Amino acid sequence: MTDRLRVAMVGVGFMGAAHSQGWRVAPRFFDLPAFPEMTLLVGRRPEPTAAAAEKWGWLEHGTDWRAAIERDDIDIVDIVTPGDTHHEIAIAALEAGKHVLCEKPLANTVEQAQAMAEAAARAAERGVYAMVGFTYRRVPAATFARDLVAQGVLGEIRQVRAMYLQDWLVDPEAPLTWRMKKELAGSGALGDIGAHAIDLSQFITGQRLTAVSGMLETFVKERPLLAESSGLSGTASSERGEVTVDDLALFTGRFDGGAVGSFEATRFSTGRKNALRVEIAGVDGALSFDLEYMNELQYYDRTAPADRQGFRRILVTEPQHPYAGAWWPTGHMLGYEHGFSHQAKDFVEGVVAGTQPTPTFADGLQVQLVLDAVERSAGNGSAWTPTTR
Image 1 (spheres, helix red, strand yellow):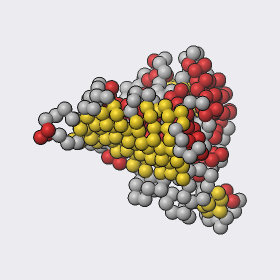
Image 2 (cartoon, rainbow, N blue to C red):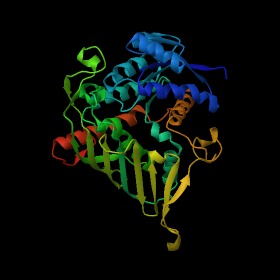
Image 3 (cartoon, one colour):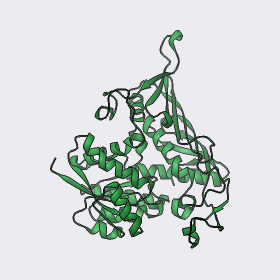
Image 4 (cartoon, rainbow, N blue to C red):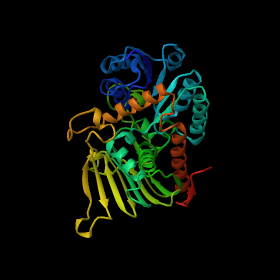
């Protein structure tokens, strides 16, 4: 492998660590057509950025993303910043001729997402590609579920149940972070984790949501400020700030293929740590996926004899399963981090082949339209609201 794609990543938080692992590991387990070189890490503060670069394996570090996209030796810009900065960085990078990988949700508003999708479409005409990071598509069991539905194993799809349950905000004294500020995050549980439930249900079924009816709830209206946010020194602050996003989103939806769905996204589901669950019910069978059992897929075959029916567990670790053949022997489990290696693999392969990697910014815009429709529906007393504007 002699060709290289030099990556600059903007952002150093939780997703920065996950994406770094993906870039570092992917070329060492998959036969990629080019080597993604971890060239530059960009953060807001010099010292934490330098420490993260050394820990994660980036060659250089800096604090100016504009300078990064102006460099001739950068081919890919990976955006893992809070949502309010996605559109500015992504559009500038695409216009500078850089391929772009951007974390979900694509933006904080439909208008921003629309501008990003249009910029990506223009860039694609020049052979410059953009992809949004809905990483759970690349969990082998989720990809395999998509393949089975596409093969017609379930017959006509009638119902979808999707939920993403976490409990990290149950404590009312948990501090106020950027994820709880609408101007930075766009929305709360709805966009942060609900976007994954929306995308994964659409990915597996091959259908898109066309109308929704929903409600939003904020259980804890104020939280302690972080010391840094309050301007105080030390690790704690007695000041409190307003939570301006939702803690819980509940909605129903209609799909363009005739299916109906129910959705829940919450960071208040006590005892649930990272439970992304999608169940697809069709005329001939059903599939059930749970991220907390991410190497498994539950399959029900309604066409089997009555005395042999019941959900059965498929261990999705065979070499024939999506992505699994590059890793360990059968039955040796994969984890959360592997999806980011799969994401890097698919992105590099698409860029080098000159083919559009998915999900596209247009796909990200479509999810943004659903998020927006849920918010509008909640504001209108849960009225049915189309996912168009």
